Length: 245
Image 1 (cartoon, one colour):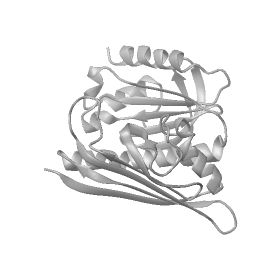
Image 2 (spheres, helix red, strand yellow):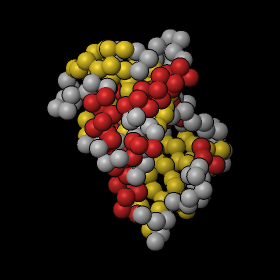
Image 3 (tube, one colour):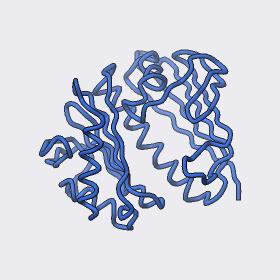
């Protein structure tokens, strides 16, 4: 049954409105995935959308009617993202983010997934603005094999990388990352179905999407000069295949 939804987040960040604007319009590969916006009201937005508000360093709104999920399954009849950015007194910015629309079916599961992903993505945005501001990213992302839909798949993934079960946010751990090898990383995010690892040159995002009926996922935001997205994705696919063999 179709039903409207709205997810609202507000936060402050020690970055200028111009830096936040650049991150959400031209630098999305640094914290989400690469997307392109035609820089004008009425211009093209990702996923076949339209920009309904384009006010640089202040407001961006993009609206999509009947988003294409890529698998031929209609899950939404409307999706809208609205960002409002204000300069904060004394420096930095205040940001209001609203994700709204209409889910077609499986409403509670879809809302739960969107709600939890929102927190992880916006956390990653703040991590980028704090630790890698203005740096050009190389984005790589992949999903696990069909076996990674299992109920315990996310734990299998984190243990396969050497991430201790009890590692809390803020701790430094030794993990074995595909294409990199053993390295020290900060656990910058830890929830039952999500984990974020940060090194001096990259951010690694681990998604327990098995909880929402999909395979686990991984994204890498690499700020190393000369990083190769294809090699990174191939290394992660190989590791995921072996972890879930």
